[in-house]
Each structure stands twice: as structure tokens, then as C-alpha cells.
Image (cartoon, rainbow, N blue to C red; front, side, top):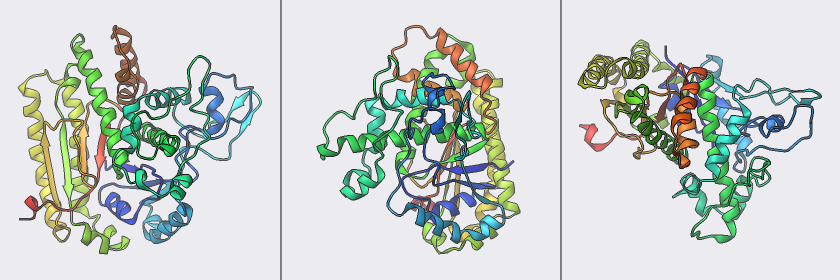
Length: 415
């Protein structure tokens, strides 16, 4: 199958370039409703903090992602430009939960939200307490030099997810030097919202068999850090548990595609849809089959050279399909690279389409990378049990991978 993708939300609406990139890669592209900004449904916060459902008081927004000025108008313009893709059924607007449900006496209507609100809140608060994660969300970002009016529009200060809960203290402000000291609280709130948006996107996509589409620098940086952290935890587990040995290997398939963005920008949505040909379908099916098989191979084979040999053979078979698509999309200067052994946690230039297969599910990645990696653990027994339970309970049929999308063709590939 060719997977569907969901564009991870940001403070600004998706761009036409991002939509075109996604349509060139995935069977269907989903964009989140402009109202869908909270990490969990606001009506579920009571459950998340351990209150009985009969208590129906409203707690307000739950660490929502802010919006740039004019967001809704720009979003409507984007949809208008994408009419053909929407009518063809390859682009749609969705919400992670219904916005009409409310708290009732004796029950909390979740509005179809597929994730555990208590778990999501706990993961978020773990990240929001880690200063390095907060800094990762805004480091070298244009938000640091944005004018005060923009920051005021984007920052959402009042949030029920960050205060003290029972014996759990409130999440802290960003520490360290800051050029605009008066905006420390605002930058902290923006960083918090970005962390919440990423973990919600990863969790929701796993639950719905979607591939998360990250296109902004902060999305890349946060997601790579989560995976790098999870690898450290899994490496530690592998020293004592055979179950995790193959998962801890540096066995990863790196898949990158490059194209000429100047050509892409000149193309209409109709032109892009015409490129969704038979050759594209065969290449996409082959690519997704390759990525899914990596996790299966790493579980089935012994951690020896046989494992790498098997993966290299599958890559060789895949490349023949990739070459067909390169020839068909020569006007876009499309180049496809696929290789084994890339290190997770490195920096990938924003704009590349790249997948790194982790051989573990999204639930495991979130728990290991966002919770256990931030603790000083002396006994890994409970951690092993928790992560195994997550893999069994939260089946990730799409296979968790990091995707980053097209960039300009490198000089080395232009020849």
C-alpha cells in the first residue's frame, strides 16, 4: 500500500509547496483543521489529571499551538487553490477529535480522540521539564527575532497542562541566557506548544496508520531528538535483554529524494496530480514495502552480517523501481538515494524527503525518548516491561519513521 500522510501543524498554515511535495509522495494528504490545536481535547483534561468524570468544570485550553496573524484566511486560500486535489479525494481536512462534544454528567465525550489523554499529558510534561527539549524547539529559529506583535499573536499563555497537578510541580520556564529577557515566558510557551504538537502528531499518526509529514525546522529538530533519545534507552535495554538486540543495532534504511523546487513552484496542482502515474505507484509501493520490511527483518534474523546482507538485497530490488520514476520525473531533476547504516540523531537539511526506519513502534519511541531517556534509571526491568507492553498494545502498522521532505537537488547530483 501507499501510505497516507498528515501534515504536522505549525504556527503558520501549510504552504502550496508542502502540499505539492506530499502529493508527489503519498496516496492521500491530510491537513488538520485550524481549530484543532490542543494536545488533548479540552474536555478530557479532568481524566488526564485523575479527576472523576462526574466533575464537569472546564479547565480551558490544553497547551494549544498558536496561530500566526491571518492564519485562518491563509488556510482558506490554500484550500481554494487545492480544489482539484480535494475533489479528486487525495487531499482532505481532518480533526483529531470532534469539537462539538462537551462534558456530561457521569461521562466525558472524547470526540473520537484515539489516544490516552493521561499518557499524552504525562509525556508532554516530561518534555516540558527538560530545558534541552525546550531549547531544541526554538533554537536558531526565526521566532527569536520576530516582532513583538507576531509573538503576542502566536503565544498562548493560559494553559491547563502546565500548572501543578496534585504532587507534580508546574513546568518551568526556559533557563539560560536569552537575548530578549522580557520574552522568556513567551518563548517558553511557544516551545511548549511545539513539543505538544509533535508528540500529538506522532501518536495520532501511529493510531491512524498515517505517516507524519514534518517540514519545519523545529519539527525536524524535536522529532530527531526524540528518536535519538529512544535509541539510547533501547541500547541500554539490549545489554541485558535479547529481545532488544536487533532493535538496538545501527540497522536503518535512509531514503532521500531530491528535486528542483523552482520547477515545482511553477507547477499547478493539476500538473502535480498528473505525475501520480503508474510508475509513481509502483515506486511508492516498493518504497513503503521496503521500509516496512526493515523492521520485520531486524526482528527475524540474528544480529549478524546476514541481517545487513538481506537488507542490502531488498534495497537493490527497490532501486530498479526508483530509477523508473527518476526517468519519468526528469523535468523536476528528481534523484532518489537509498542506503543502509545512517546514524539517527544527525541533522538532515530541512526540505529533503528522508525516512529512517527505527524498527520500533511510535508508542515505544515516545515512551523511551520522551520519558525514560530523561530519568536516571537504576533498574531497567520495569522499563522493559513498559515498552514491551506499549509495542503489543499500540500496533503501529505503518511502521514508525521520520520523514522530511524535498529540497533542491545538490550539486553533486546534478550531473
